[in-house]
Amino acid sequence: MKPMAFTYSIVAPIYNEMGNIAELHRRVSAVMESSDEGWELLLVDDGSTDGSTERIRELAEADEHVRPIIFARNFGHQIAITAGWDYARGDAVVIIDADLQDPPEIILELAKKWKEGYEVVYAVRAEREGESWFKKFTAAVFYRLIYMITDVKIPLDTGDFRLMDRKVVDVLKTMRERHRFPRGMSAWVGFKQIGVEYKRAARHAGVTKYPFKKMLRLALNAITSFSYFPLQVATYFGFFSAGLAILAIPVVAILRMRGSEFFGGQATTLISVLFLGGVQLISLGILGEYIGRLYDEAKGRPLYIVREAPED
Ligand code: UDP
Ligand code: MG
Image (cartoon, rainbow, N blue to C red; front, side, top):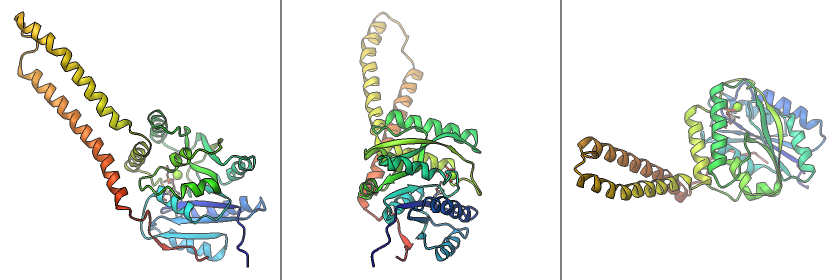
């Protein structure tokens, strides 16, 4: 028998989304059934502990469109997306948040652009509902900082919600880096890309799984994956302070010969030692960030461990 031809793979990473799974399935089904094309819904359980796993299994049993991928523990949102890429069989792969902040109805708008020939159609957050000013502010700073300092022009205000052609996903599947930033990776590969604006809704149920610490880690991953800028800052700073020191030598020498006490005293020495010591430690820390990542890559461990893969 010929394997069933799927057109769309919808991938939703799930970490403790008990209150959202049924509604997500209901809305995705309604949207996809209205389009009379083939589809599958990949629910990637990223080590949930709230009963989401059982809920996913139940859904998979009741609806053959649902394919569960269940991780052995929590590996993080980015890794769950990666598993989605790996298991997806569709001609187009859509990544969507499980909390319904990305309205499934937009999938058809993304698909329209795809059918016009675009290979990556990313959803741009024109408006965000129900998020704190702190979240919106840090997100805005984050997107702009990344845009400024990385070598890949990652479109502003886009999350992971996007549709990608099979060709693109096949390329992304070969990129096995451990510290990953999927939206950066999907910008890096090139292809024909376009954005579609949408209004980001409030969470359907539950709370955000991205505390400040995780956001910071994601930001660090984004920067280190796509830029050497932090490393170069240390070099710039070194040149700057060395240059300053060289200029200061004749100035201080002349002042001394004239009998001025201007740069004398312990405090001046202490301040400059502390300052340069601090800069050196920060530079070491930056180096450490990159070396730690290098070490993780060198270990070459699998990106995720699957306890239950889809049965087909
Ligand atoms: N998520 C995940 N693993 C994690 C954290 C989050 O799979 O370790 C999923 C989560 O279930 C949701 C999506 O990633 O479907 C986005 O997370 P969330 O809505 O908490 O982030 P926010 O929208 O607040 O930035
Ligand atoms: Mg969310």
